[in-house]
Amino acid sequence: MRRVGLVLGVAMLVLGGALPAEAKPERRCGWLVNPTPANWWLRDRDGEWVLSVQGRDPVAGMDEVPDMSTRGWVETNGHYGYGCACLTLETAPGQRVVRVLAAEALPLSRCRADRALPPPG
Image (tube, rainbow, N blue to C red; front, side, top):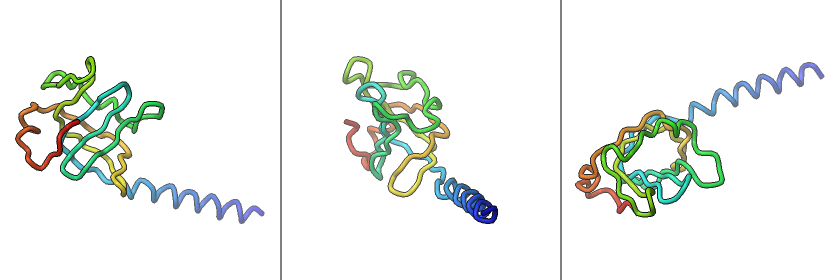
């Protein structure tokens, strides 16, 4: 019985150590969208990266996202809306965001000039 516990403990350590290895940091730039409370995503040339959905816990590191109104912000619903940003994200397969490592607000003109980006809304 003691051996089974040891084997399970080692298996949990091995599997637990493997999970962070699948996540990888990536710098992604595009439209940072916050249309309503607690809903945030980044739309870049590769698609949509969900950061927060109302009613669920946001991804770790959302406190790294700066006040977007400092470099341009388009209000579409009260003070909710979208801006242009680059985020360094730890991602996993399936366009899943694991953690926000860093974020930088950019001028709206940067995203508007990028023809590879889909519309922000």
